[in-house]
Length: 429
Image (cartoon, rainbow, N blue to C red):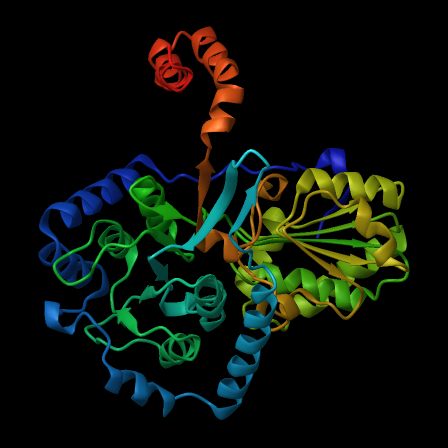
């Protein structure tokens, strides 16, 4: 793992929007689903997943969900249920209510909060099947009051229709009742435009491969999307008090996600830098996903040696990481200086996986520096807001001239006259 000064390290990676060939392929898939519905959906499922389905078998049955419970470990079931309780409790605290204020002149202004009606959740399959992501997408939508939540996830490849039982159980435990065995760009298009079998949704959320990401980008505007997520990333800000073994383990916990994941230590301590470098090499040698983590560390991993914690904080704010761990003598004292980070983990025992799986905050967090202006998935993502305006006659008479002045300044005489006609009538002119 390289030790260097921050100015020797590229602090930003370009957002990946796919090759021209990938974009063209996704555009064709989206068009075909939009125009041909189920027929194209079934054809692409056969082509990409090797599974021959009929429209009637797209939806996962209650019998399959019940059977999935027989295939999962009891320990998993206990853990997923307790995690769901924690996640629900955290997100319930985010709820906001509609409000209205009445002025003395009878004016009523307010904001009406309503949940989206129908949300689609994409859950990857294969080696990227993460039941925890089901909870993180579904539970905030449920807390927001979304009445219809539909999950899509690819069927097993090689001609089998089955779905990872752990995904099915996580969905059932989250309260999802509508699930379909489809994946890829074709699933995103089906959710956006609908088919004969699948009703269209208002928003699509959930991670996926580059084709899923490009499809989400393509249908944005027809529906809302959560984000186009980049590779996972972690930054650890640490001083001499940090345990090198803890730091190394946490860096590798993100490096094992994929070859493009980023794991960075920022420290003013040369001795910690050397110790962590040695620990990473030692722990990496026995990591089951060694080849993936090694590629991540080699390409995007670094130990950035700074002059002070103050400089370290400046580096962190410039990186705006998805996950930030602060392992210093007094981490709470630094919290107020952190401006840009998706999730902040304080202290030696708040390892990033605690947040990934169990604590309650959402693990779907802005990547690639977008924590400068965006937030983790939350209840607000599944709510829409309507402004409420009620002006009494007295209020319009008092403010009408000002409204007309502003309208005419912008050259919109029709706007001005819409107010003027009321003023003239009420004043008897």
